[in-house]
Length: 93
Image (spheres, helix red, strand yellow):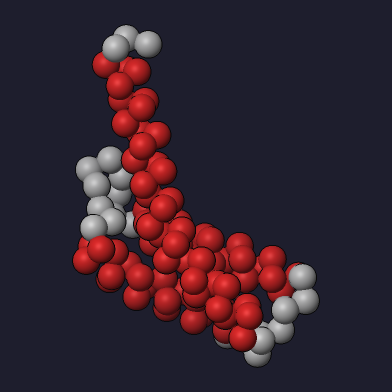
């Protein structure tokens, strides 16, 4: 049940993403949200395995901070990689 909050939080982040200029012609509009959801899911499972309880404030804090950070920096990384690849393609490499 707690995992549904992560999915809901990812949906809220998807609504906020265009307002903080997380959009580009180099990737789809759902990519930032997918990165945030994947990061949150991975961290949730990892922290659960490490013994964090669902009522622990730490598991929620870590996941809720990491998701928007990943949503911001993940697409920027993808965009830079795509630009480099496009430049290599244009130069014939």
